[in-house]
Image (cartoon, rainbow, N blue to C red):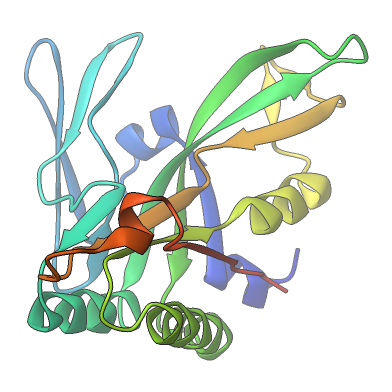
Length: 205
């Protein structure tokens, strides 16, 4: 994977993230888990609280994976942050065997550069399409990074389990974040019946 691609996408095991937090993060252990603070001017964290073997992990400044918006001002603010900051998610790699069974391997903190021209163009295009197709309605749009992570894992020699390189098929779970917009329409039938769901994929080349 080229340095340019690495700048757009980083994938870090949670344990490594805790040991060596990237720029704009600080980690505090508090007995039963970890508080992770982030610089909101630099980073946009979209990670729910979760548990690992050593305790609970809380990103104190996180908007969580599902970002809720209730008016145009909130949408505009979230959109601006998505297109100008480094975005952090949590995803899990699962190993799938020939018998079509699977087991959880590792949790990863995944980040993309929302200000990168190629990612920014994809995000703008996807958000414009989503909002234009549901004008005046409540809606939900998923921004999916599965394809980007599949590309990363196919090119990576660093994904290991118990010091052995994983060679079987990997399945990435929760490799997305969601924007949920609630309009003030009284009879928002398309949303009620599940017709206002949108999704677009981000690619990393």
